[in-house]
Length: 256
Image (cartoon, one colour):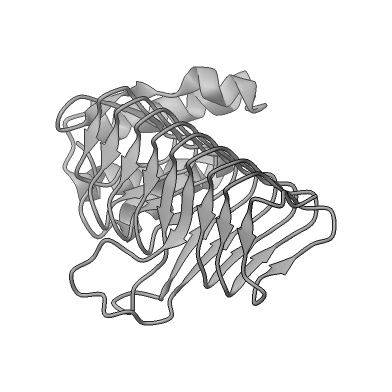
């Protein structure tokens, strides 16, 4: 299952059924789980742990040193879950000692060609990063986030679950769950209602989220006043609670 032209370190741990294509390089301290397919010309350096059923296409680079001038070669890590797809020329860097020392990617994510995940990022599940989408260091993406082509997220910024970043969006502040953000710098545009329909949200739940969006972005209320109203709404509609909790925990302020 390993092409004889591949270079695999004896210090790597590779499951028996892993396929590795020609001219790929697997470094020491790399662990690759069962059912994973590594195409040709891929480079994976460690410490990196890759789960089961992943696919890594040609010229991708996973687990190399962070692009951080403060990094001095410390043994930081990259941890990847199951069933992720890394398309051509994707780059994912390890963490730094200036954070938790680890970059984390969850399960069932699709990273399209030339997308980049910088050091210390934390990605949830079922995320789509379209072609050339870019994350700065220490970014957090919630489950089901979609990043349009050429969109970018500033370092230390958070994007909530089910948010949608339009193509070419430049995100410099936190984007709450369910919100579609557009522009440079990104601003709130609407609720990602189509995405919510596809994920099984009921019409009533989507309507509640739209009402919450209007309270936050269309009512003219100050943020604390809007949050007070949203707290009341969340008692009757549980889908609003992640919206409120995200806003309260924001450290960079939210797009508004």
